[in-house]
Length: 173
Image 1 (cartoon, rainbow, N blue to C red):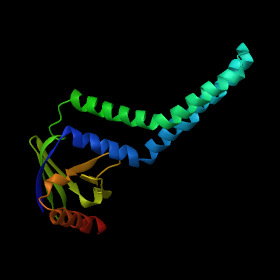
Image 2 (cartoon, rainbow, N blue to C red; image 1 turned 30 degrees about the horizontal axis):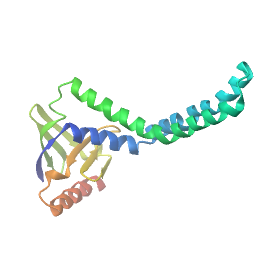
Image 3 (cartoon, rainbow, N blue to C red; image 1 turned 60 degrees about the vertical axis):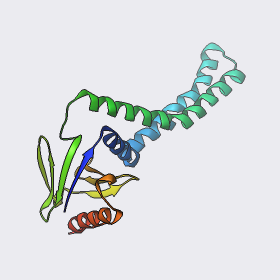
């Protein structure tokens, strides 16, 4: 099976956001930064009271509100930073194998991807999983790397389903 498509900067950013949302390591880091580190906001009023005799009636509500706002708003800030930094990294370099025109073949031996600068062959043993979000199919071939295939590469829903079935047939074996 053969498909041709374009990978845009937005597709690559979307892949990184998808990966971040589904990575246990990143989610653990987010949890620590969101809840554990922010506990400092709840400790500060008592330290201020102990060292500077600051009135707890004023300090506790201020720092409690700060804590609550942090817990509510930090995930959005975290994701926004990842998106911004991913875009910056893409803009820093010139990687024609990552973005632009792509051709992909699914064969009995594996996946072959051809770009303007080269060709990559991946055996089925290297494929870890196939997953997708609302508009892109991801064929993971490493912890942080995947073939990114936008659904717009398929002319019909049936063609997309057939492609997914073909890939799943080989990775199931």
